[in-house]
Image (tube, rainbow, N blue to C red):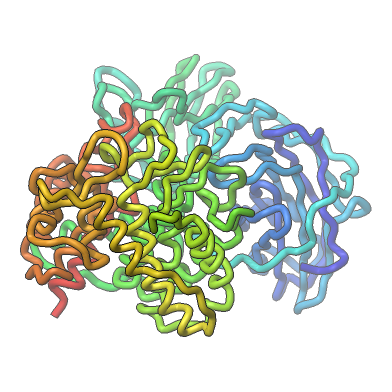
Length: 616
C-alpha cells in the first residue's frame, strides 16, 4: 500500500453503516493495479463494472489489502473508481468492532497515480443500502444487509480517520465467482419457494418486476421440513430485504454471503420473478481426483464438495450459520485437504492467522478474528497437533518460526495448571469446557471446583507428545513429566468394574467413546477400552471427533473394516436423505433446536480414512 494513501470515511460513524466513495484517475489503460483495504467489507467498481469485493478481515493492529488487476476495466484517459464500504461495527465470530474506513492506491506500471485522501476522495452515506438497521442474522455472523432500489448517494468531502497503517497483502488468494446458479420454482403448498438444486454458497441475485413500491423479503435455508423455508430459528433470522420500486428491479447482494439450497419469497405486493439465484463464490484450488467407486465414491465426492463449500477467506465451520474459523473444525478440514486438494498454502495461512488470536493468558480465542470470546481449552491444547500434522504432510518447517511462540504459550499455560495430583483441573467460566456435542462433553453441565476431565488431560498428553517433536525441529525446550500425568489419569478415571475410563472426576460417571479413544491414543487401557472405543455400551462419538476413535482403533491393530463400515453406515444415511453436503451431526437439521447445519467441514473426515485405508 502506498505511503501517501490515507484512511477516509464519510459517514456518521454509527454501526451498521454504508458509505460510498468515488475518485477520478487518469491512466493509459494498461497494467493498472488497485490496492484496497476496508473496514468491514467493500464492493469496488471501475467505470461502472464490479471489480472486487470481500476483504480478508484482520485485527485492529493488522489489516490486509486486496491487489486487483483492473486493467480490463480501464481506458486511456479519465476513469472512475467507486467503492461502497460497509462498517458493521459489531463484535462477532468473524469481525471485530471498529470505526469504518477505506484506504486505496491505484498504480500504473508500479507507480502510484491515485491514492485515497480527504483532498482527493469524495464520499457520502450510501443510498443503495438500509442504514443502521442492526438486524442480526446470528450472533456468529453479525448483521444482515438490506438493499434499496432508486435511492441516490449524496457525495461530499471525506474526512481522514485513525486506523492502522500496518497493512499487509491478503494472506490467501482472492475468491473466484462461478457461473450463476438459477433457482427453480417448486410447488410447496402455494408458497413462493425456489430450489438451487443443491447446497450452494454465494451472493444473492434478484431480478423482478413489482406492481408498486414494496419490500421483498427473501428467506434462505438448507432444508424444507415444515412445508416452508425455516429461517426464523430461536433468535436467528436467515433473510435479506430488498426495497423495490414499481416496475423493474435488479439487485446483487455482495455484502452477505449466503449458504442454502432453498429460497422463499415474501412480498408486500405482487411481483414477477425474472431471475433469482446465487453467484457461487469459492476459494480457487485444484482437486485431486476421486479414486473410489460405488457408494464410497459418492461419499467421498460429497465430503470433498463440503470442504470446498467451507473454504473462503479462511476455513469455515459451516457457511450457513456461522462462517467462523475454529481450531478443531479447521484441523479436520486441513487433514482432509492434504488429500483432497493439490495446494497446501491455505492450511499454512490459517495456522498462522490463528496465532493472531493469542490471548493474554496464552490460550487462543474461540474464533478468528474475534475478541473476548469464551476460549475452549480443549481446542487450544490441540493447536500444536494441527501444526504437527501440517509439517508431517508438507515438510514445511519454515512455519515454525511463525507459530511456535503461540504453541509454546499454550503448552506453558497447561503445564502451569498441573496440580499436585498430576492433573489439569477443568477451568471455570468464562472458559468453555467443550469437547464435542455429546452427553457429558458439551460443556453445558454445571462447573464444579476441583473437577478434572478425562479428555482434557488425555488431550494434553496427546498434544505434548507431538509438540515435543516440533520443539526438536525448532530448537526449544519445555519439559513435562508425561508419565506422571498418565499415572494420574489411570488412577483418577479408570473404572475396574467396567474396565473403561469415565469422563469426569466428579458427578455422575459417564463413559464415552471419545474419552476412551483418547485414553487409548496415549497408551492406556486394555480389552475393555477397545470395546468402548468400538462404541459398546458408551456414549457414541459425534462426527466431529470420530477421527480420534478411528485412529485409536488403527493404533490398536484394527484392520480398517470396522471404520469403513461405520463411515458407510453414517454417510449413506445422509445421501439417502438427499444430502448434497455432509451434516454437522447425524441428526441433521433436527439437531440444535432445528438449527443443525447440513454443510459442516468437520464432518468430511471420510476423505482422510479412505486415503489411509483404500488408496493403493
